[in-house]
Image (tube, rainbow, N blue to C red):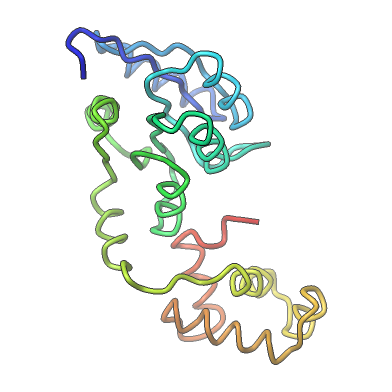
Length: 210
């Protein structure tokens, strides 16, 4: 970080009160200035292109375009963009997807003001920050095989209460294939049964994607 450099920030969150609180927190710092706010990922992409701020703080769950898609789109245009996830949603699956999309850091909204400010400054220097217990969760599952898109398609429908037959008809696969995919995803999640598999997948963030 260059001495006396002003870090221009883009805030992306669909809750105005959250943006207001963040703005107040960040602008207490002499080296930080909030230059724009966006209420969804679509606005975030447009504003980032227009202003090209040093750092963006981005929520995950938003209308129209979510945080993951916005991060991916921004990073495709600006490979050096410093994008920080600030969300209420935990789970190693979510963290992994956000980092793969191009986020440099991942914080929960329970983070202190000091943590958020320090993470912004670290981002400018290219240093990553992940909420400590989420980092532990990531390390705990490192090396384990993640569920495939086809397995998750089955599991989402199990979460909706569909039977194997109904799932097979909807996905145009046989009931045996449904059972095989459920057996595989349950093994990967170390689940005792179907309900347990759904619970684990939701907690870890694997069922967020459509």
